Each structure stands twice: as structure tokens, then as C-alpha cells.
Image (cartoon, rainbow, N blue to C red):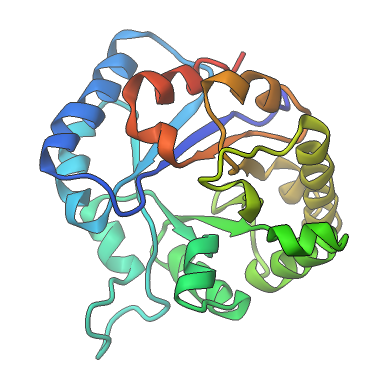
Length: 253
């Protein structure tokens, strides 16, 4: 964690949660932020689309950020069932997750698709949380850096900066499996991403936040976030428990 980059603790609820969870879980986090005084991190929650409007209302004035889990690359049009970035911004979202490995796999999203969605997010005034990461098979044959580097270059458009883009490194083999990259493994890839961003964007790349997204939890968060190029986490399962999610945030010192 850099002294010049403020950590971001982001929760991806995936396809979980109902209305009661907004008043319960998000309400709990809102109260903690409102009563704890200045905290050394930013906190973002990305619930399903059905809960976004309610969530935005609950967090009003607390500093807790609300984001979505995806958007379409077009602003509007004949795209049944899709949601545009402009619609998310209209609801009051500040961020949107793009290129998550589950969408790259389940919806066959390519890096070119993620690139187009990222530009749409920027146009709507949203910060894009762009995900990259390798599978276990790719890691086993030594292709981690090649895969991550290719996804990064193809998914992130020109013009990326700390104000409009966050990168999330999510080793696919560590998502929901209980496996976690060792600190050395995580730092190696984060440092590689940092070098790529710095080489392409200069100082804006140096200031861009890079999150670790592979089964971060209270027991390993402090060790991971303390690493020089890890600026927080994209949290899955642990974000569904207020105590766990808050504890991860409090790991930032």
C-alpha cells in the first residue's frame, strides 16, 4: 500500500441480496462510517441492480460509495434486459465493475468488450473497476504475466487515470475456492501491472489504484494490503458480512 494512494475496499455482492440486506448490511456499514470519524480507506459496495436505488438512498451523506456489477457499452437503444452506464449514473452510482472473470467466462466477454464498456462508463462519469486475471491452467504453465498484460492492454482505453479507473487483479483460481495467492505471488503481479500502467500512462498510471481480488478476508487482508502495490481489495463472499467487510477496511493503516 502506497502512502500516496488511498486504499479502496470494494464489495461485489454478485447475485446475492434482497431488500432487507440493504437496510441491514449496507445500513450497518453506513452507521459505522458515520460514527467512526475519518477512516484511512474508501469503501464501495456493488449490490445487484435491483437493489441499487435503495442502496443509494440508504448511504446518502455517509461517504459509503455504491457501484454496479456491469453495464452495457451503448448509452441507450434496442438492447433488451441491458443497463447502460448512463442509467447507473442517473441512479447515483459512482463505480461499475467491468470484465469480472465470471462475466468473461459465463458471458464470453472479451477484453474488447470490456474496453468499450469502460469508455461508456467514463462517458457517464463513472469510475470503471476493470478486472484482469489468469486461470489455474494459465498459471500452471507460466502464462500469468502474459495473460494479465494482454488483458490489461486490451481492456483499458487510452485516457485512463486514477480519477476514472481502478484495476482489480483477480486470480481466477483464488475466487470462491478458499485459495489465496501468497503475498509474494500477489505482489509480483501487482508490481507487473503497476509497471505496465506507469509505462503507458506515466504518473496517472502510478497513482491508479490496484486491488487484489482473490479471496481476501479479515485473516489475510492486513498482510496483503501492506504490500507496496496493493491498494485494497475487491471482496466477494466476505462483503456479505458487515463485521468481516469492516474488518478488512480496518486492516488499512
